[in-house]
Image 1: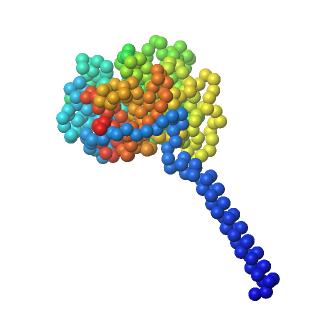
Image 2: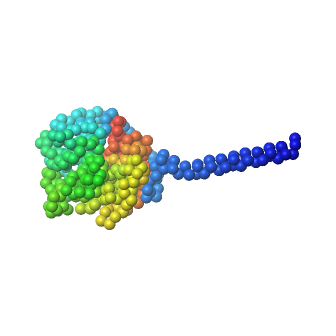
Image 3: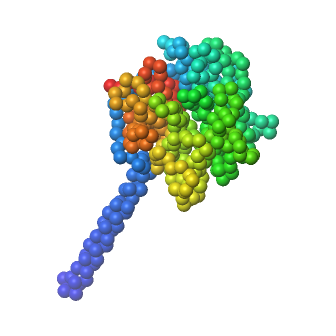
Length: 395
């Protein structure tokens, strides 16, 4: 072969090798850049989390149902009351795996995120038989809001029904009703109402309902020491404001403080200690962004606005909240359990005083966890969309 042709072929081979090297380098570089992105998209990353572990828990099906079980409460004889978002209240008798329907419910507007939502018993239920329900109510124009009703329960039906708070209805939207209920050590009733999808109107305006946590006496009267009682035009039942959509609420078993968590947008789910008159910042400050990926605020902190005790990014879609006091789960006493709709998991938040210092995944593979409660037998019960109620047993 002529020398000139050999040189030409050699140059072509060298060029091919160079192009192949560039291609391999590009693939490696793209992989290096892409892997963190994929990890963030497909694997939950938990901000502030020093440790994410899994504990060996077995889930035993306690009661099967294809609906969405939203609230749970045990009456003193051990029967379990369960609200279904579709508008039914069920009672599962102690020792039974079947449920009976309770009559005497209000007219519930079910649809989207709305329907029959939470349930709580009066602290003195054994003597007065009062229970409390949150549900979605419509006005004569079809606008929807969260209502709080109390009624007496005789084991089969409700009586003496009375709405003790009806939020002003601004919208026909089927989202962000909040609706968790909790009593404190002094017998005050706390409840949440989400911002009703009106982010820029409701949460920061105390003259409007929605995007708030409220405090009432057990009969619906407004306490004289509520923070905005003397503020002209304010909704005087408001206890705190600047919330997005709180769907977890529980009383600390020792201090009696009220803890809550709320859904963020895309990222920024929060755990908060609810305090009198405080502004929790939504939507002025947030650790999240719009679902579309755009930014609605550059601020995560601002003077006069509370920082969360904990936040998740990306969101876990928290729902349900309970404190562990039982000896069924060694070393868990005093910690908080939170359900995740998005990942089908149960998280445990370890507290040091009122500060959250660690998050752990203690149960997964559950599908959409709607609520979580500790039962009178000391076991943890988990409500799962489309499946029913599970009891968690530590192996």
